Image (cartoon, rainbow, N blue to C red; front, side, top):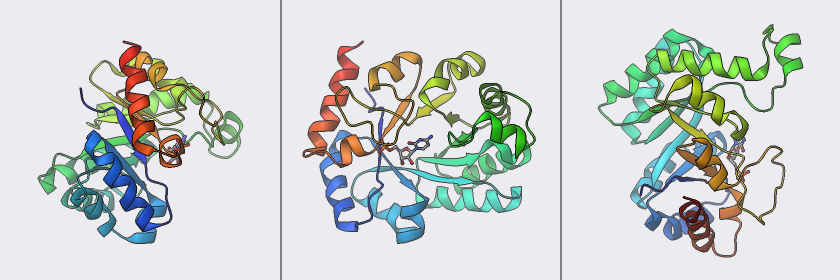
Length: 233
Ligand code: C5P
């Protein structure tokens, strides 16, 4: 089976990152590199993960005019990212431009859209952003917009998986963070699901950070998660 676990590499130390890649690359999964790592270490960090045998989810959450996003997406494709994130709220022209950009690069990079950040609640949507819908309705309409614009999937919270799977169909990729294996520290995550619950709900990939990266044995933690998913089938 394809490894559905995307390891969030939120580490500030490059040596620690190298060690994690060495231990985890044999599982064949994807590593998520976010803005912090990308801005801190530069684009060569993507090449470093790939050279270490890992695939990369480049979580840059692009949001700009279509022409700029197209060129940035093209560059992400040239870097060899497997997955690239953009903001669905950039609109259909921007989303189409992102898809066009990765296509132009000739790479197989898939574009994922972020809908409503989990840090934004209904009050903020209404009072600050002028959106009168519930968070879930806004998430669903942005997910549909992304799908209709040719985007491959979305990143969403575990509690949104079922609704998105229902409105966007079986072929749309769903990637979800907010995952905690049974018994691991919840930390600052508020609405969590276990790996097998998220997969059973319809997620294609789960993003897991600290439960793997801060484990005594990251490889052991990865194997436990894969076992949990396999045993729940
Ligand atoms: O360590 P942890 O498993 O909580 O890491 C989850 C990763 O997913 C982090 O990189 C975090 O920024 C990201 N993320 C999240 N919740 C969101 C969006 C992104 O945890 N709503």
